[in-house]
Image (cartoon, rainbow, N blue to C red):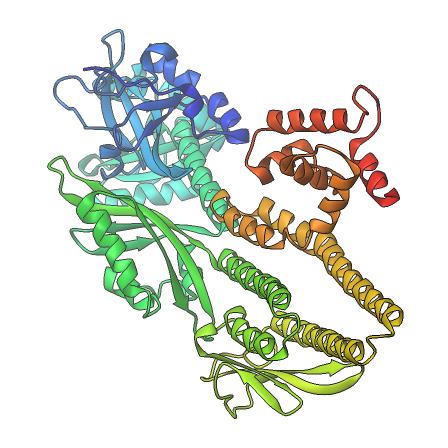
Length: 640
């Protein structure tokens, strides 16, 4: 069978756990969950099975012949479902490279890393212990030669016989042959003789932990005691419990829970971290698929069921995001991933996966979308003012149409602008109290109002059903409309004066010059505000967002480019021969962005950005000097 090469760098073991993994005296192996191919093993595992790393990594236990011809599990994962013995381990015999058979205890469990399922197998070579047990059985008829403590106790607690191996235990008890055992052991002896059945108890002997098996010889009135050292076994069990505790702690810290759904029995098992995500009392979940679906928001249930159906029928990864409603009425988001596991015939038998609280991320995405809508609204109003800069009616009608999409519930949002008893709007304004208004003021006088309302009752937010950012937006729109109206009215007044005072051309030109200066000042103020406030915020948002969402920021920045043109125009006037790309890079350098940040924002390589920087320095005649480019650009344009 051809083996697949799996690079060692693919190991999911990282950080401090990797050091503990390699330093562990117990053999440990990490394999893929689907094929059982070895991803990583520690040195103890290599010593146990006799292979070197190059001949083991990328192969399966079946390919290496671990299981011989009598038993061939498809992969280590098959062992994870077996019922362990009383010690908490699975007992298996494996064939190592030399051909020897080794008796091992296996602890196998699954875990996930970066969306991939893996298996961890901890191996305890108990070949020596098995041989010792066989020898104990063989030597049971010859206690004096037994390497383990063997002694005989009468009904009254007197030690009738003890082999040499029992002396450390008897000394620890402060007893000896012919003396009595401690009171607690005497009670066990009496109980064993009374019941006629063997009794097992754990006893401490200095740093060792022993299991004493008292076997009653009722007719003779004594018990035979056989001791087994279980110190190492108990240490392994303790290590496993600690590992499980650490795994649970990691889940709690990441607010992640794991689940497993048995498709044959419909039993759905959740880890302890899941119930708090659904705000249900621990132990209250009924553990079925139907009980889970009942917890999902009614509008998301079909989507979740369809995603599960696709995963089961098409053997596709399961991914779903859905809402749950807590008892207090609050909405929370859950992100779920998983995969379907099948038996050898290809029949789906179970699904396993994880869930994570996605509420914070969803709220952040929602807030970002709302801010982008608001910025887009302001941008469109600016463009509208350019097209209808001298006509109030189409300008206010256009603004009224732009407002509803910028609010949180655009489908039921209505907007109206009133100006000196004239109305401009998207429909009849409802009489409900859930409305937002902002006064339109021209030269300090209230001349109208911007009104927003919802036609249906919506949940409360910061100001009734409205967000605090929507209050800021409506105030900004009202202020901007006031300035536009003031400008239009001023322009009309100037035009009237121009018609009436045609002969006074010099005075009219002075007035028009003042008007254009004010217009330019307003334009530069807007551009400066966009450049100093909005664009840095968009840059920071772009760095925080996933790659697939950065196009939303890019779209908004494109809309704002016209507003930032004053700086770009000054820059091109100052420096001859700058290309549009070099102009944009100059603007980013002036704002303090380094090469890597500019490369990410422009979706290009740092090397390309460095080439542009060199061409810009050459055009500025500072190539080969120690002049700081960012400082030079700021100084150059400000002096200009």
